[in-house]
Structure formats: C-alpha cells, structure tokens
Amino acid sequence: MSTPLLEVRGLSAGYEQKVGLFRRRVVPAVRDISFDIHPGETLAFVGESGSGKSTTGRAILRLLPTLAGSIRFDGQDLAEWGERTPLAYRRQVQAVFQDPSASLNPRHLISHTLDTALERHGHRDRRDRRDRMVEAIELVGLGVEHLDRFPVEMSGGQQQRAAIARALVLEPRLVVCDEAVSALDLSTQGQIINLLADLQQKTGVSYLFIAHDLALVRHIADRVGVMSQGDLVELAETEELFESPQDAYTRRLLAATPASHPAGREERRLQRKTIRTA
Image 1 (cartoon, rainbow, N blue to C red):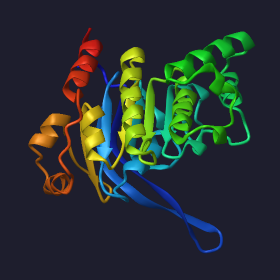
Image 2: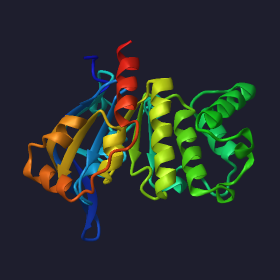
Image 3: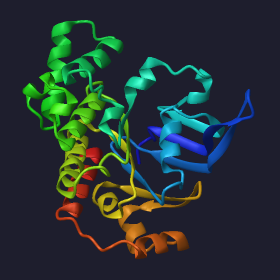
C-alpha cells in the first residue's frame, strides 16, 4: 500500500454560531474521525443529511475550523499554517460542489474563469494558459467553443463538466466532490461519474466523494466510510461494506436502498487498481 496522500486523525470540526451581539462559538458537527486517502484512490463518504459528510470535506478544504485532531497532506500538518492557507495547497486540493455556480461566475465566460485560476496560481504566459484551458475543457468532454460561453448558455451537465475542468486545470492531487452529481438527472449523473473515473485513470488524481446515493458510490469508490450524527461508524473496502456491513446503521442504510448493479462496475474498479499498482 502506498503512503497516504491525506491523513486525518481524530478530527473534530464544526460551524460558527452567533451567540449574543459580539460573541461566536463553534458548534461541533464532526467528532473524532480518522481516515486516509491514498494516491489515485476514491474514498466515498455516505450518510443521511446532517451526518457530517460535507463538514469533513470543508474542513479538508480549510473552509471550516478544526476543533481537534490533525489533517496532514503529503506529510504536511495543516495546523502549522495557522489561519493562513498557502496557494500551493489551494492548487493541490480542489473542489467540485453540487451547484456549479459555486465555482462558475454567471457573469464570466468559462475561459475567464479558468484563465483567472491559472493566472492566480502563477501561470503568467498567456499562450500557455490558453493551451491548458483547451486541454482541460477537452479532457472533460466539452469542445473548445464552450470556453466562449457563459454558464447560462450551457446545460446543467455541461456546467458541471466545466466546473470539473475548473478544478482539474490546476492539476490537483486531490478533489473533494461534495454531492457533485446529486442535482443532475440520472443519465447525466452516469456520464459525470464515468467522466470522473476516466479522469482518474488518466491523471492519477484522488477523490473524496461525498454522496447520499449508494448506487453511485458503489460504482466509483474503492473504499466507503459511513457517517452518522458526526461519527464515522464504519470504513471498509466498497464490496466488503456492501456485501458484509458490520455496523447496524450501515445495515439499515443499505436495506433502505434499492439494489443496483451498474454495468462495468467491477471492470472499471479493477482497471483503476491495475493502473495505480503499475
């Protein structure tokens, strides 16, 4: 097994809540959870709304305060940065959210959105930025013409592909996919899931895939963590968890989910593992 890219130990995190006129407190939403993500791996978190899945993702993205525990990325303890987050970390750890408008400004062309990200992260040569934008937009299955469109001129699936291009244009090592397909119709969901898996094969990127749809999770994930009320109640290899769940909550969650067997699931997972061990 390779050295973990991301190591989370005893993490507790939460949200700020206003108390009185001038005081704020942090309300814990995740308590004492630990897990790793390896290079080229997809770890999925599932659970009901409010279970702490998105809180965990946002803590890794440093969008929420860490109350306890540690997050290490490529051996670096994130706590050593204090409240400052280096641009290098922002480049290496990207996000794709449920709503593409989280990363696509409706007033800007797609080219402007991608170009701004590249320039901010040190790519000064205009021609090089253009080449990178074209490569990224074609990598997600869109045409060069989509660079000259506003988000409103694109379908929901095309917008999410552009959002993925926005994340991948910086060549990150980890992408947090927070309910990245839940707002899309079923056919588009399948296209995006297959796209993410194909991109992983091509680039070796790792994913933290946050979702509530267990069928999609079974299709894309190498391992699955089950969260309930802020606790990580079970973490196992995907097929092991689906075939032999150990926690009572996991069994109830699976029992409430219709059986689904996406075509090509096993073949795709074997391909990903073969590429990572090659």
